[in-house]
Length: 58
Figure (cartoon, rainbow, N blue to C red):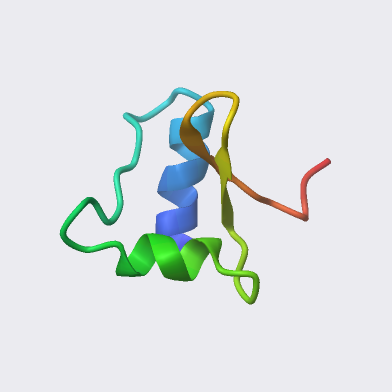
């Protein structure tokens, strides 16, 4: 997951294309990453996109 987090962070900074997970046919990774137990991403109703949650950064 650290590898994935690196790409998510770069995409959030605009240094890489947006990372796409899951999709209509396989939501398992998105479901896991957004679960309360893991919580590394959250859906933004404002932007209509997933946001990276990084509790170690201000």
